[in-house]
Length: 135
Image (cartoon, rainbow, N blue to C red; front, side):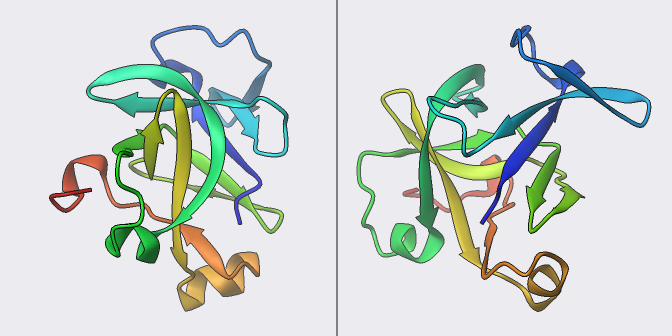
């Protein structure tokens, strides 16, 4: 599973008032999923907002229709931390939200991801605009 995400400071329209960390020539905010009452940066219906972290949802359960009432959104992440490895995320992480809560969508790890992070699941990196109808 994911331990943390990082978001470039310049990709958010507002100040999170959290600590800023350097990464090369950019600065980023880091969000550790073990924090209590964690709020993650989310893009939902074209609006940037912060939603309360609610956990993980497996892609297969979404495809099976077990999450009616939850809406697709994107967690604004530039990097993820898993298995002690920070790696770059290109288009954010696919998620579902409801009532200001957000669930990160995960799926079975690819062989490469499992070797790199030693994790059995990985985030679904499908861009928000490419989600199938009905999600």
